[in-house]
Length: 136
Length: 150
Image 1: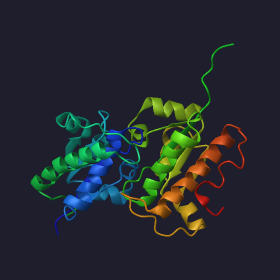
Image 2 (image 1 turned 60 degrees about the vertical axis):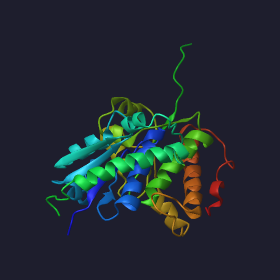
Image 3 (image 1 turned 120 degrees about the horizontal axis):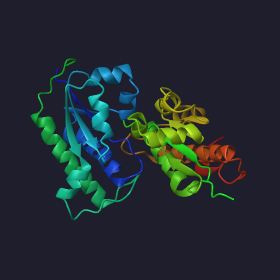
Image 4 (image 1 turned 180 degrees about the vertical axis):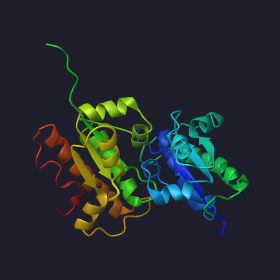
């Protein structure tokens, strides 16, 4: 059985780019690649939850970060992921200059468009990943 | 007299992206920050806290904090205690949901009406705890937020 690639979004609640990162993870795992990707909570990962770490350890994973602090990438890297693919919303937004994302709990239309654009980039990564891990 | 910094309460939500209860924590904390107690609260970012954010850790060492967790794993409370100091208050969404026999609250991505009501109730409890910690008396204002059974 093919291993679902763990997708870890930013957990921040103070910026709309963080909200877009989270929404992108849901779009990816629920709409675009439901059989290939699954959302994993950053807090469980960094607190060392055994089941969560087992899902991540030794395999590829996707981090979707809202800001330059890159907490999701760091969390995955310190949890034994074999390869961490980074998707940075703060870079995606530069490629879609017309968008003005707003909202922290509920994104505005531009925020949702940004989330979709981010999810599309993440989907390409999932398509190109081997889908293999030590716990396949 | 020196201009001392205003005492505030730090709110740390688990954010658990895998489960609707995590979404309830985020929405509840935002409601307190934006609407219910904007002058009395700040948010501490849990991942940043865990990644070694010294500003976040220092705040939690010297100011009271409220950990808002989605489930009994209590990531926010345990992280705060591990890296700074024991939170002054701890709120667990599943406990509140069980107490009020909450039905399905939607998904992690989209809360339904029940989930939104629960988030309002949790926000009310956070605001109450904030008042208690700051020794403010605003009884009767928030207890019925969300129309929850108390």
